[in-house]
Image (tube, rainbow, N blue to C red; front, top):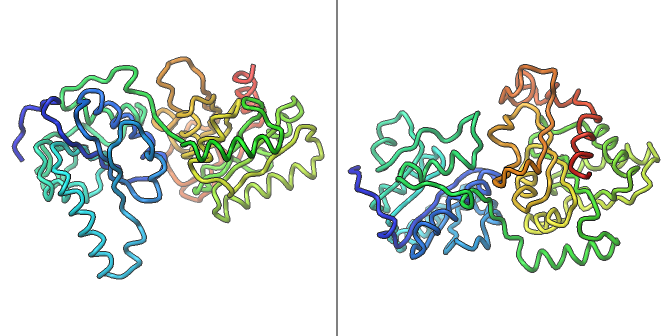
Amino acid sequence: MPTHAFSPASLRRALVIKLRHHGDVLLAAPVISMLKRVAPQCEVDALVYADTAPMLEGHPALAQLHLIDRNWKRQGLWRQAVAEWRLTSELGARHYDLVVHLSVHTRGAWLVRLLRPRWSVAPRSRTGFWMNSFTHLYPAQSDPLRHTVDTNLDSLRVLGLAPTPADMRVTLAPGAKAEARIAELLAQHGLPAGGFVHVHPASRWAFKCWPAERVAALCDALATKGWPIVLTSAPEAKEQALIADVLATRERNAASPAPTLDLSGQLSLKELAALTAQARLFVGVDSAPMHMAAAMGTPVVAIFGPSGDREWGPWDETGENRHRVVASNTHPCRPCGMAGCNDSKVSECLATLPVAQVLTACAELLA
């Protein structure tokens, strides 16, 4: 496709595509914010999977949010075709001048060919079809030595745009309804804003999780220092089973003078964001809730195993060192990027991570 000189002043509508998981979608938010800053007259839309929509809903720079439901494939070929046709028609009616595709999902290349924007951006790939679909290509979708927020913004740097420090902020809007419910829950349990530690030890990927007995020991240590604990997880059975193990271990320990509130499986993503915004500290693993806590400005202790913390750690655009990453000092093999040791679903670097190391990080941020 021919390359035209990019002009922000010429933008009327732009589409940002991020077809990935919740955390990935949230970390794409700065691209939307920056586009609106450099082209305030432009309507900026986004296309994401339906289940990840809460990560962008309510973003002040977002005009429209278009959704792909992963369940379309289960509804039969005819219904899937109708849903796909409706989506393509909706997108086509917007007459985009710019499409920014933030992954190597092949749908982005097909959409660009159908929508025919004046400018289109995507990560560089080896295929000729892909390379010929876009007017601008940036070096890579990810870089283990750079944070994902920064590599996402390469999509705009390749257009000649320079991010400012303010552009680096990850925006997440819980919304008034979610904030009201959390305020009510906290009031019911006598927990003031900034008066509790939010612990979210679960992930859909078990190889990213810290053992339940160590989570329980950490909660006991924090409770002994007078900090009430609020535990959360997604409603999935495996995640709630981890919370149940944590609570059972703590009950056996019988050493928890401060109260514990179990909200596992009970909160929407928006409510989870509203909750973590009220916490004095968030403690969790490499997961979307960890990124949400950082976006809400809550100090974060992030426990990392096989995944790379330089690329996926809690983002802090302020440079104030308000977060801590805790990872094994005795496993030079990490970050290996594998699903546990030799893809076994069990990560030794997490299984052996000392409670004292995590507690030290907590104490630094609670001081």
